[in-house]
Image 1 (spheres, protein in one colour):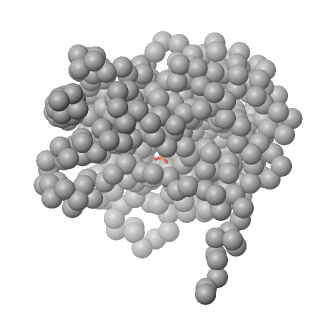
Image 2 (cartoon, rainbow, N blue to C red; image 1 turned 180 degrees about the vertical axis):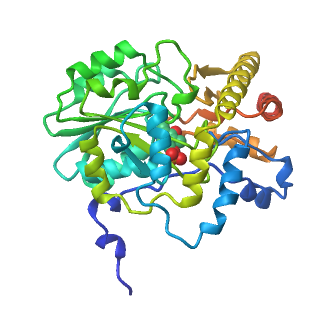
Image 3 (cartoon, rainbow, N blue to C red; image 1 turned 135 degrees about the vertical axis):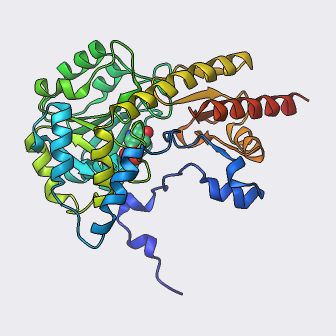
Length: 372
Ligand SMILES: *Cc1c(COP(=O)(O)O)cnc(C)c1O
């Protein structure tokens, strides 16, 4: 017989679907009998340069400390980052990736009977965090695949406690400008926390792209989240953070697991924060790769969504998962976005030159196969 444990789970969790990660290289190698070196993974918006040498050296130095608990207050990272961002150390909350901080925000401020607002095609962690908390998700239709801030503002109800905005957004790569954002903030009541997820901030180079941290002084209800997983090349180390008022940070800190960032990750993050060269190289590789992929996709006749991030989402002109499968057979891992309600699109992360070329070649072959 056995017990139906799903019935015992809290109601928000009962109907939850787990996050679908990009396929790991080793998994595809096993499935297709391919050599690991022959596989190109452009599925998780990772930094194609690999980790900064400064990060790996810092981790090596820290290895002898592995028997010790990390500094729960993350003093070194806190001081380094607060200086870099010109904020007070007590405005920072660290997490095991920014995902951890997003969930922590939902846990601290959402519950049954209240609601949270986010856009259609927004990052899938928001609905997961909201639903698990028991709160209701209000999904606002996108405009040209991007956030419709006016409609998002209009969707806020009296029971709304939180709004999630991703700028640039994943998986669409869309971004909104400073004026649009400040117009939005002006209309949002102060008791609604606006979480501005800037996971791809370091890549967004448009002149009018808002810098959330610079705007914190104007809005006490604004929380910025950022990560070391993308431009800083530490997705595997798991470090992210939020910048907020000290008051909100102190609330988050009540529930935060005391050692949610390990000492290796902290050391790696401090090192790469001081490594301006690595960050610049990450940006350069990304803008060159973006130009190459945009040109290649256009030449092959694919429509793509202009991206401010380190990935491009394009219309495959067929079932996106079928296209993904065909690319897998050629050793190229892209990311289906059917779970975002975009069944014909695929998201491809911007890689090194050779990787982008491999992807375009494989895509051209898929296209030929389908036409035949
Ligand atoms: C990648 C990503 C994150 C954060 O990932 P972590 O590795 O948990 O820091 C957050 N938001 C968006 C929109 C992302 O794409």
